[in-house]
Length: 477
Length: 59
Picture (spheres, each protein chain N blue to C red):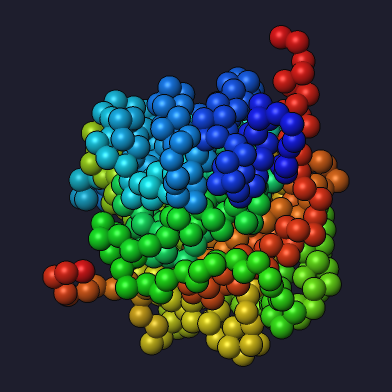
């Protein structure tokens, strides 16, 4: 949202890196920033409903402790945590009645612990679509249009950051659950490489597809959060023995003019709503203006994305939740319950076919990078702007498609391939809703994806607070 | 997808799918099976699944 001047009362509107800089320079106290975010949270929450719990007293107490002592790179930064991650002293309910009586967590998930160790202050836990499996996240409302969904499943984290209640947040992404809400809410969302950030202490949806990552207002903010989140964790063996992130992750002096980017336009990245086409074209123009060489790229195997993604998710989620499903199935919503029940009956041969398809997709993408000497891919994050709360289908020029299949078909390819993908806003479309594209890097090359996303992010007008939310706030009750 | 087949499969696997859910599950299972999990088998010759087992005790 950008720099504010004069009063710390609107410090919530600062970008994360700017706020961290002011705190490091002694121009802003952690307690002032956290108090500002909590005041904003209190004001917007009745309209947005992004939080399942807020512990203002604890947040202020932790912030005050940091006022007069040096700290890490996130010193005093208010952050929000998707309610699938363990946070000490609070239950992890995962948006589901079946976990509604969970007791308080005894320790922080490693991702949360990393944020705290860097000085971040947790202001609350955010809503998730039930069991992190869906793209609506009721009852949360999109700050850009309260009649629309923030996306999902990390919809609460996205809505909280977009509304100004936190400067950053974390979510999880199994088939797009960070990038879809980031796109719908005008944020940057990073799904890192599989194995980059620990998944320990978080609810699983699909062991082989789950990723943990940040949501923030700018690419620089997201990069800072990622640099804190990343690292080896004995509790998640997929993180062991991985290459380190470069330091700095985003160089201050940068020239992307020697990079080559392949643009994906074929299925599953088609059909697109006109606004998504404009978003992609504007991102291409911004990269080309910086000298980036743009190539057309075809990966035909990606047409099989949805079949492979849904087979793997159904089988793994059913196995993970089998005991809960047997114990109290009536406490799981029908859409998620159907997926779990179906997963219990899927033949092993189909699951293995999906995992072989996944390997074929990975190999094909790798060959494409090599053959075209690519540094990254560019694709639409989502094929259409945020859906209304009750909207079940998109209409692509007369072709109806379910909302979940539409949104997942463009994001899941990179869960299957395990590649880093950065969703970045492209400005407001004709409907007044944010557009978004995703930049996809080689394995463990988040840096190049972030560098290219920064070019796009800097090329579009920065968002202020969402007008729909400001109008709601200004309307007398 | 035949609902009787789904019900029999659920019974055999001891899967907690009550009778009033069989029709819905049959519909979803049919859609999943139609997808065949992705690519045709003949295009996957020589491709191992994206699964790994590490025998080391410290992993």
